[in-house]
Image (cartoon, rainbow, N blue to C red; front, side):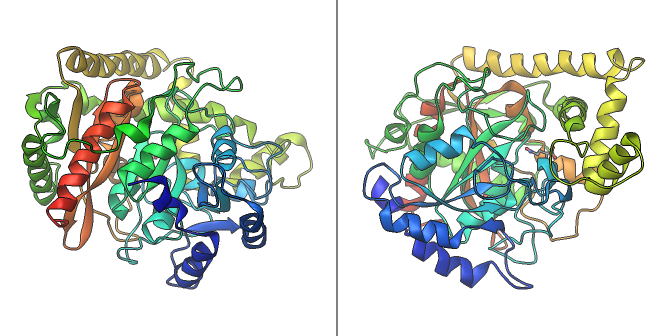
Length: 467
Ligand code: GLN
């Protein structure tokens, strides 16, 4: 792979593909707003400088852009245009990329199917009766359908990796602190990340490399130098590229909750990793089963505080009322959908005086134990972990109605957000024609080793002719 393959896709080609797939009752509905004229004009004057010179990209609608609205898939922010631009978006543009539109998402990034968007669900390009995953489902669908080859998403508990798995593409959540969150609308700040979607490992690594690095506008963003990740994602030794690499297989990720057909694909991938020279070792991450309960205390708690700002005064829509208090109530009641309301109520509850110690403080303690599980494994000679990305393939639109069942879609992904470690999903096979994702995780700031393993596995699969 090389940057040229990304550059081969033009803005014009993006629009023909968009016209073919996005609109209409059975269209993907991957985009919430687009800039056709502006992007075509930009393509004419862009020149050839930069790794992404002239490359069309799509941006999740919770990342601030200067000309297109940033709605977060919410009625409350309908038509809202930010006065500033997200750092990750600016960096892509500075590399020559052209933003063609903003993508659909679960409202405020809360969900795993993109069905919680106020603007209707996105459809999975592989099977349009199914969800693309979420919350970054629009970006995943846009890349999987070939409208763009690179898109930005965000992750709080799996919102890049799970849709990447459902749509059969590559999705990366870098280390917490690797990429600036300036201009990313906050959901749960201690868990939020900016992530990248691409059609292959090299493009994803390049995307992360380009948006990573210190940013004075985000105090949580690390000053560590960014390694040449595109190099890590280039397979040089074709015989034993993973010689010396130790791959951990966490036993807690291979339980009955896992679709046996997905397990079989994971086993095949582990065999391939062995054939590439890696040593595969069973490891234990004993606190894994607590990850979902911990996440659903911490994420709503942080969300209830972050979303307090949407009171009709400074952002987006305002409902008229007689007094200030009534205006707040009407704006918030009318503006937020059911899932966002549920999270705000839950978060307010777990933070309230009598329950803080019982829920929030305990969840913080268990989060630390989950983080230590990973640290212990990586300190004991394991370089990367390999697991399934999601327990099932893409489900049908409307099929999962119980919120708790929806939460379980992230059982294998939330752990990396809680621990802040880099993680990614890539296609490892099909079940009944539906894509299956395999996940690599690595130690904090070791994206390089993660991409090396992922690129080798991708190479091996291509050499076998897909599988
Ligand atoms: N599905 C999870 C949630 O609803 C994760 C979403 C995300 O990563 N933004 O919170």
